[in-house]
Image 1 (cartoon, one colour):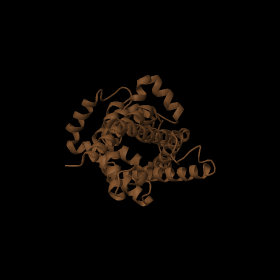
Image 2: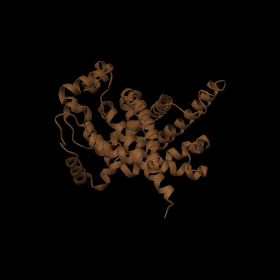
Image 3: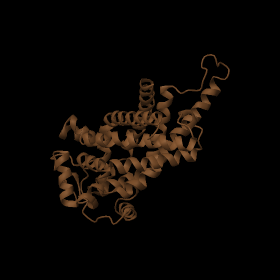
Image 4: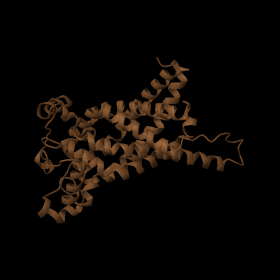
Length: 331
């Protein structure tokens, strides 16, 4: 049995992680839907598609504003929250597992469960802990990620009307292994992504604390410590989310292609990704680069960055405040 203090800390981390993930996911869902539509579209996603009609045919989506107008006109306001239920079922356990495992790893490395002691860890340990926590969370919640992608990408008319119908069709056509389609590139993506996100967040927090100490060195009576304001936490989370997503986006594109491979989709949304289009992650990267060029690896990068930066900021700030609140309730 674990000590009561450890059990309490695990409960705080899991609840705070789940709630912060749910808030962040719901707020940023519209940008996530647009990002997924771009990523699963084989045709170009920018206006230069007009010059390539002979090669690709007409592109359904050619820009963020155009995609926003089309989704709103064809699917209504609720279209921007398409797949949000499986997304919440994904993000809430994902962030719960991630923050719980992350805190356990940092506690083990630092020999203390105190957050201020965790900030004293080597930056390399922060990155490594974040990567392992991301892997654990990904494996534990992956089927919901797959269902979220399928429901968010299909558009109108819908092939799958409910999460249950999508789930049963995947089991029927692909078997249980189908629920983990794209898991390998996802794990390859999440190692650098989670490592960068959590590691850089801790790094930015350290820098901000140094800045606070410098600013208030001569007026310490106004601020006796170097604690961060909610706005400073937001900035740290914003920068961490931007950094991680900008570097790891091509792997996310590959993951989405594997997730929708062979699945039905209305023809007006462009060419279908057929079964066995990609042999493995390396082959997928080469094929996308060969057929779609460098822009193909960065499809959806702008809505992804616009989404990931505030999503990371909201998640970290909500987690910090909710965990502090829960700790005060349980003491």
